[in-house]
Length: 331
Image (cartoon, rainbow, N blue to C red; front, top):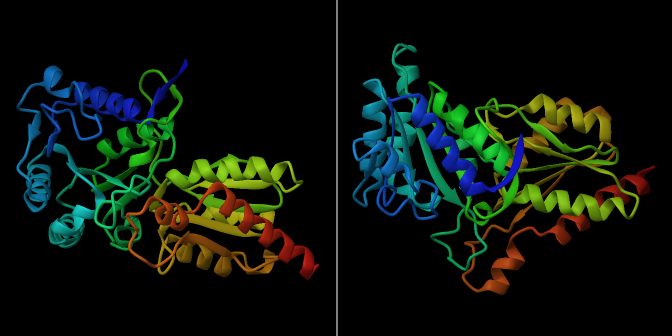
């Protein structure tokens, strides 16, 4: 049975259900217990599961990440929160050199079943140190899985899968999605990590978009449909491992590719996805793959400048029109 709940409620349900199912799971981070998390995702967990399993921590990202690794290696399944993705910079050694490498360096003998939840993205005038979208940094690190859901249904199903995973997972939630509502099944369900989904079928071009950009891509596709352009929208959902085959298959059908992300353009996920299309579907392409992203600047504080930087429904539609026009001109 489906009901409509918010992205935040969907994540809270995932934590409630998984902690009820498995006593080795605990939650830790800044303000996650008594305050219920800076965005309310962990609300009610302390009351239901008690202080041994829901812990507030000092403001020390390195300590939080170290706690997660140590407890995972001794048989627990920690879900820790790093407030704002920007602050992962304070624990890069623990995440990149320790958490991501440990299972490999022990030849698979040591499991590292931990989840790092964090919040990324702009749109709130939070300026350059609280608005970054850094998923490409972490998708580049072997040993880490990186998840970025764009709907409440995916958020719940993917978080449950991440918690059950025996490898470390970075779970990135966009701040602007927490109050977004959508249909979510009741009861236990999971969505496999590494599996993309076609959110909208189309024939004229493929738009790959994730997290907040997914909703904007879908809105742009509806607008384009009124103009006779049918866009297929593919949501990777997991960025590492990336479901390359689903993306390439869509590109082979539509013959054009537009990748949209909020991170800066240079060396972003768009470059990786465009390269995949060029390597595996070059013969099918009717136009060069195109990327739409933030410019390579720190995200501005001023609302008008911040809005200018982040891809919008209008800029996505404009880029798609350009791709289809380029194709028509070549034909």
